[in-house]
Image 1 (spheres, rainbow, N blue to C red):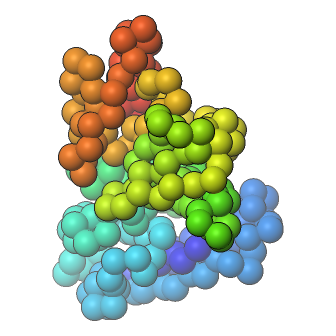
Image 2: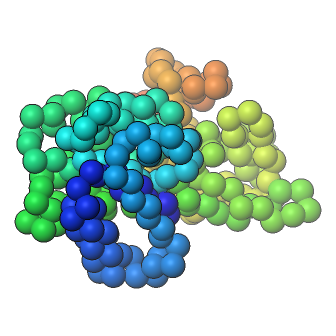
Length: 242
């Protein structure tokens, strides 16, 4: 996990590092050696080196000279939609603006008074990252390969006893049963059984039609007539919670 801390106050940057260290020790000590964080004293220096996939989390002070935190966040969001943003500030004036960049948290300074709220925002970021990293082993051809949950659009077992995994631009025929895949995926809230032996990743649904889900890559996934109301209700509920 790679974290950037962008704040023009040295003492505040040190407090942020302290709070991150406390979080790691309390919540995810097993990740201690895999978490790296870099400090920046202004947004200009940070943006000079920023690129997609460089950081998992960026912690931003809103009130900085020249380029402020909110403008920085807009650049981050337009460059890397997967990068999580936590705002730190002395005022709640811009809290609604944070929704435009899907901020994970908005925490008031001084941070030592609001460390619990900071940890709550960090919990959200870490859970999102863990979802992104989740995977299972599938038998594809003569090899056993790791398939990221994040990459799966839907899984079906229509004309074969083996499951077919649909990704964005290709399909992976497996030697695994649908039950095997269901056992691996059904507890992940992203996946919905919308039809007999079909699991769809709701993150990639573009539109819900009368009898199908249209995926963002153009694929159509059928909705069970028998369970139509149940399936549609589950999808709407998922949308409202995410």
